[in-house]
Image 1 (tube, rainbow, N blue to C red):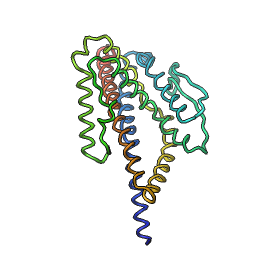
Image 2: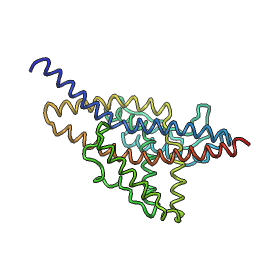
Image 3: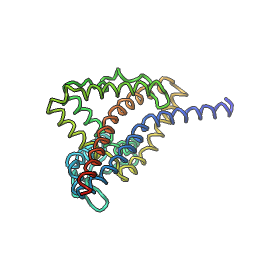
Image 4: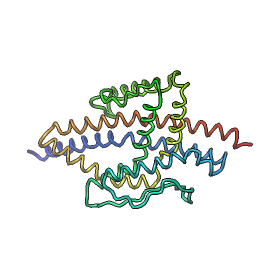
Length: 279
């Protein structure tokens, strides 16, 4: 095989890996950026209206869920949790809770775990909001719990995939906010829970640094898997892409709920800023 043929194979493997990697973490990156922006804007308005104590109106629930998401992901990736603080008074750098953990740097699995531990609040918070929506509303057919609704090959670079995603999100919101739900107290309890959780889902600088340390390990694993696929078994690449697509589709549907309620938190905080903060 000529040098040019090998170079073409290498470029193909890198391109395949890049597409999979973006598809896997793209939703987390976009969702994290949007939720972080919305949370900063809402916090500024709440603090202006009520002082720092105003943060606790949602943090009493949102921060423990945030930290528990980190802790659970630590256990999944076999990190040793050394200290957990679910909620505390805001310190000088804005920290209201934390999870400290240790891991074996020689373990690829645990190194990859750093990525998912760092972004755990996005996954855990969205999952809890989604589960509450399913269990606490009376006219809800949340289709993202039905795997058959996800495209077989969802990709960030495929327009039909985005069309299917838009249809799924629209169907969920139409069902969730059906008028028949408004008369049930459980629905309004769900709204309160969702507002509290979504208001505390953004990632800290420490979360982002931790996630970044695991991203390289994950990319390397995908690179090796795709190399084996090209050289030995093309079906392996299809299986990896299939499961990444399914995971990403469901994650983005759940993140859409989190973003919606975070936007609602910002709207409420802005109204409070206009009415209370300017007295």
